[in-house]
Length: 264
Image (tube, rainbow, N blue to C red; front, side, top):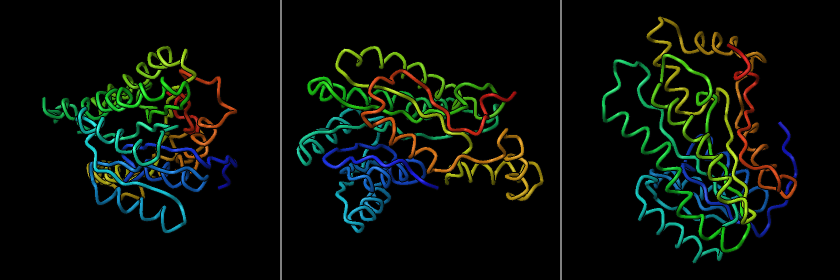
């Protein structure tokens, strides 16, 4: 799948949840376009692995172990990254967790975890970087939201609620940052076959007495374009949103989802 061509040489991207899945895709795409990348993840080994991929390909990367629910750790990571690269141009607030699927299985601790990571973690990450971008009067902030933040459903309810909150936070933060020339947008992936999504598919298929392949085929059939979202669909959109061509796009939720949000 082709990507738009954007030269990001001299730019620096700070990406949370960069050790796998969509976050890894963002890291590799930013690096391939010339940006230096700060790969952060709760799993430090995974972050180091992605950073190693980037440096092996001739790019520049820094791996940091970061818990996005820890404000002090985020602030330290931002300071460390700025000391290394002098500035940060792009923030990808991407780290997230799925949580239990069945409503009756949701314990208070599950609500705490999903909301802490998926919305408070996003807000703390943005707060740690906002003063730096305000002072420079430039920057791009991208949130990883979800079509689940728009569409109601009987499963993964804490996840849906948290992603709905991310969409509202995107709009609110866009208003705060607009006078400083900083754009804030949300990317809403459709069904993307990340490790987290595949684990959910495996469990759901077992509950329904299906193989994973049968479940995925049935799930794809419910998408209007009958295709899952590829990582490249997301990274291509991200490249555009951090480019100068998107300088006036802010407060938006954009969904490369094959029409999922248009269907009932």
